[in-house]
Length: 106
Image (cartoon, rainbow, N blue to C red; front, side, top):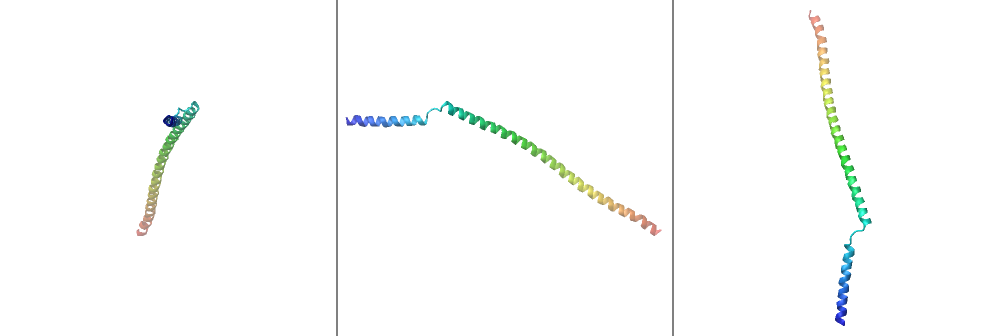
């Protein structure tokens, strides 16, 4: 009798462990599947939005880079023009002085 009781105890313990494992590994309910599906869809939509914004930002950065290069070129052109105007102004001063020197020498 004692052996039979021990066997029943062992069988009961094994059955409890199996039921415990089944509870842990049970299939998700339709509600859980629905929630997970909605969560996945939301994450996917957020990824698409992020990718779109990333592309827009990349495009804007390229445009800004092009404008910056244009501004740098304009500044360089401005500096060259300033230098040429200074040189021209100095040349006029020298030219303006030369007729007087020519008159004085006469």
